[in-house]
Image (cartoon, rainbow, N blue to C red):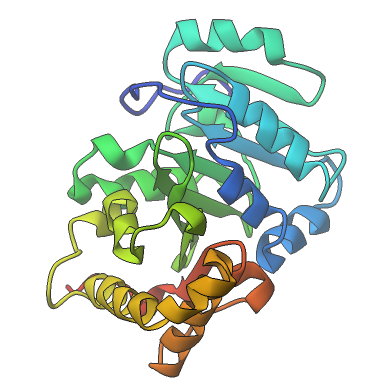
Length: 266
């Protein structure tokens, strides 16, 4: 029934740029859970869906190239609701890279991984859970959804990793050399969190604490912005925040936290 289901969703603005999603791609190729998922798929090569790639297929092409460093035989499918965008993307298609019309129903496919970026930004917060569930219901067993938002050139990027059991983590990623203060990333939080950056919410506590740690780490700027960011994350951990990953990831401007530490208040 692939491709014959009713399309579900609303077209995005279509904004895209080369390397806009390089930060999430870099994380996908290094995250232990994602790497394990892609490499453990037996039988047919795993399928990865890039939902809502925009007016140009460039970020889907880039993702396919990067994910092949993890699994050379991986198949990538770019989905867009807009028929004209799909037609334009056909020039980039190949044996393991395909483009079709599709929305949250994932065109009837059963992917192991879905990347959905800057898709839910236009929706109401109350619609997020349903959109997530529509995609999760169509994932292959053990599959993952990575849903997030970034700025126009990919310097500020945040995403939530979601499995069938619910959200697992929040990741922040930024180009620290251009960072004024960490809370700047709040304007690019995923839809499920962006309106929760207010006093009394955990994500607001995170952003406020990051700003304090960033200011405290200012003397490390003498060794470069990366050194300052690493020290900022170290200070965050000292304040009891359960930061995941190694300092090698922090040096890239990344910060990942388990979902319960930022989960919205009921």
